[in-house]
Length: 161
Image 1 (cartoon, rainbow, N blue to C red):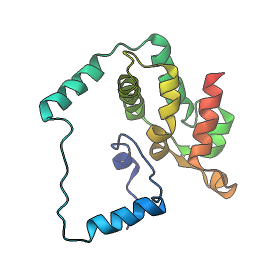
Image 2 (image 1 turned 45 degrees about the vertical axis):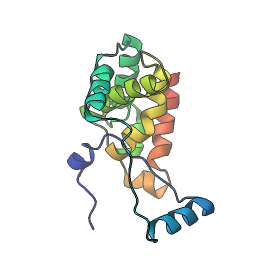
Image 3 (image 1 turned 60 degrees about the vertical axis):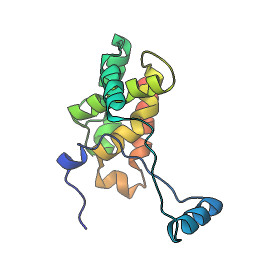
C-alpha cells in the first residue's frame, strides 16, 4: 500500500489512534464474533436528530480569543511563518481545512461536555488529533527521533504562553 497524498489526508477530520484491547475485551471480541449469534448494532440517534446536532454545533458562538487561538496554533505549525523550531522540524504544515476542523471539533467537544461555547482548552485538547495527519516532518526531525505529536505538543505549549 502507498500513503495517501497530502490533499487526501487533509480531508479526514481527525486522526484517532486506537491501541490494542485489554485481554478481557479481546477475549469478548473473539467469542462474540466467531460464534453462531448474530451481532446487531442499535441506533443511538436517528438521521434527523444527528442533522439537528450538526446544525446546533455550527450555530454555537465562538469567542474571538478562541478564533485567535485556532489561527495562531494552525499558522504556527507551518514552516516559513517565523518560528525557527517549526522551520527546522516541519516539512509541510496544515492548511486552512485544519482551522475549520479545529473550530468544528472544539464546538462539538464543548457541546458534548454540556457547554454552549468552546474554550481555548478545547482547541489545545484537540490539536493532536486534528493536526497530526496534516503535517509532515523534515528528514532532520525524523533523524532526531522527533514525532509529529512532539512538535504539536511544543506548539500547544508555545501558544499557551
